[in-house]
Structure formats: structure tokens, C-alpha cells
Length: 257
Image (cartoon, rainbow, N blue to C red; front, side, top):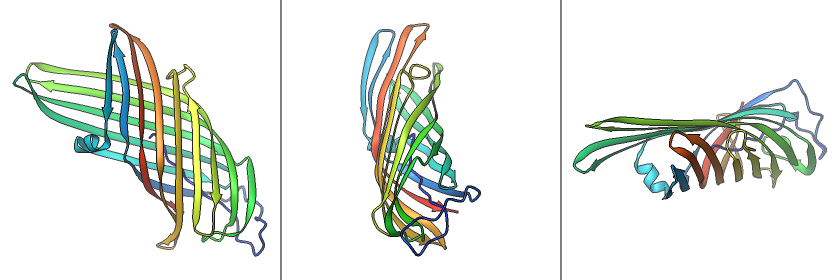
């Protein structure tokens, strides 16, 4: 999900290999819609009963009613802030013991974070956007809110359940400009720490290709993302546990304004 990378550099293109000084007052916004073709596998324990599940993306896609995935970032090259959202609404109609049922699941992963560019190494030359090619390391920190709301409608009555929690996390982002167009980037974080979930971990890696789109610096990106969450709580029926991993390929586009 809960997750995608956005990259930007600021300053004026220089004729030499050395990057120009950062301008702390010049901010840019990067908008990045994307599609995460994630599968889901893990297990749930409720009232001492364990249920294992493995759901491929093809099954999730067939039950998909609506989804939104996107990331928006504000950065001046030295500091940055971002919000990432993965929202999915699934629905399935079935017949159980001759009764028509309609099950729905709304899942939402909302992530907000900040980063600082702690290390920057010039690689020589410039990118298509006219910025110096660099290798950069950016520590990150933030919060990831997870919400799951399930309902089931039957002729005999309706039922619903809801669970949500917020995980703090810390991590690091890496990026390297391979040449004027190609970019390789990665991000990883770990969180939960017993405050929200017991443990969460997020990792993603992308290969990007720079183009000009309607005059704006744009990056086409493909990659892979995985998100693991281990959440536990006490209910009226005993201890409950949700431990699952979402993982799969990602494709998206980042436009820098």
C-alpha cells in the first residue's frame, strides 16, 4: 500500500558536474497516481480459531468495486513531506444454504511522512529535467493508518465489523540517477512497535524513466512493493490477530509541478 516512491530535485541546471546549492524556499509538488496489483496472504486468529488465506490479485480484481491509489509530495530537495493512500472497496454476492448474501470489505491505508536528504553524492552530468545526477540517502519517519470495515447482508439480518489502528514508522529512501533518463529507487520502513500493530514492515523498489509530459518533468515507474502487518487486539471473544502480507508489482507515473 500502503506505499509508493516520489522523487524530486531542485535548483538550476549547472554547466559543471557539481550540483547547485539547494534553495530552501523553492518548493515543488509531485503527484503520483499508481496501480498496485497486490495479492494477499496470511492468517487470522479469532477466539482461538485460526484461518489461513491466500488471495491472488486476479480474485481481488474480480471482486473489485472501486479503488484509488495515489501519492502527493511537497519537497524543496532538502526536505520533503508526503501523503500516500491506498483505498479498496470489494464486494461479492453469493448463495449460502440457499440464502443470497452480499459481503463487502472497505480497506484503507493512509500514510503520512517526512524525510530529510542526509547524504547526496554527485554522479556527473545532468538528468532530462536539467538537474545534476545524484545518489541520495533520505531517512524517513511518519504514521500509517489502517482501517478495515467488513459487512454482510442476508435475508436473516446484517452484520458488520470494523478495526483500525495507527502505526508509527521509521525508514530510509534511496535513489540513484543511472543516466539522464533512467532512475533506480528503493524505500523501506519498519513500524508498529506495539503502539498500533505489533510489527509492520514496508518495502518497495522502482525503475523510473524520465519524459516530458505537456511540458512537465515526468517519471514513468514500474516496480514491486510488499507490506506486512501483524495486528493483535482483545475482543469480547478473546484475543484476535491479523497477520498478512500484501505484495505485487506496481506501475505509476509521477508528474512534477
